Length: 163
Image (cartoon, rainbow, N blue to C red):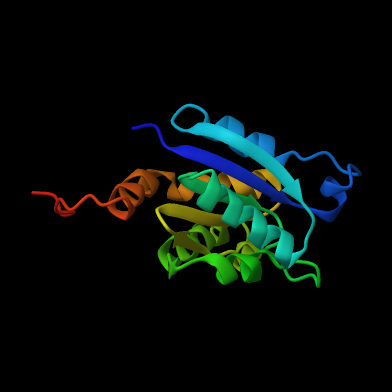
């Protein structure tokens, strides 16, 4: 099965057209081989707008994986994790913990990211950092586990262990 993906870039400057979005296109390029990239959007660092966009993509468009890039740091405007937390139903802490753990092997700044991951309905939502390098690195760490997580979320009841 070819799962669908949407990418939300969270950036005040990007939403105003004052900065080129490089993370969204880099993530889309990375995913196109195995996923159907259905939509890429840019929203400002506003909790209500981020949450509304995630809900639209999951509840209306039925996207399997919604990836956000940006807004996971410590500045006052970085609210992506809070917006995501407001709309997810279950946490997927392993995804985010693993991304931070592997990022820390590359840079000590990797542990600063506050991104979270979780589910809503039968969709997975993943927060990634805003820089193209960090976003693609973090996604590469969890991509191997993503298809299995989606299968289970969508109702696969087969055993997970290997014989």
